[in-house]
Length: 144
Image (cartoon, rainbow, N blue to C red; front, side, top):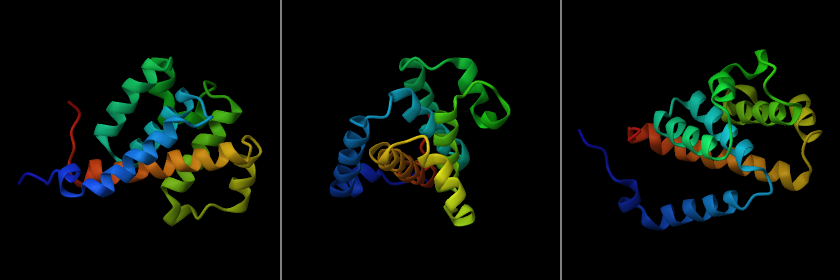
């Protein structure tokens, strides 16, 4: 069974999502970091479309294949700096918020790496990709 075209079915809501994407694109956070966050959340959520899409964007933004291949094992590799590790920790925590609950110790570890604006914008990036993942998975969107 074909699934609905959510862009057509809810155009006003999609305009709001696109406005959020525009704000995220204007973030002070560097593009490669935003793409790592998007890919990691999409891996956790099993969104093949978003993993594919953001891997391509990450490569265009200067990310390396080696780091992208190691992203799911970021804790075990030396390829990511402390700031990236903090962003990935926050990504995993908020993507799995139902089980992780964003404890104070994790928040403190992350906020030590980001100022207030960066922390808020990082959280918006995570929230946005998690929303997109729900559309990608829920409507079985496939890489092209």
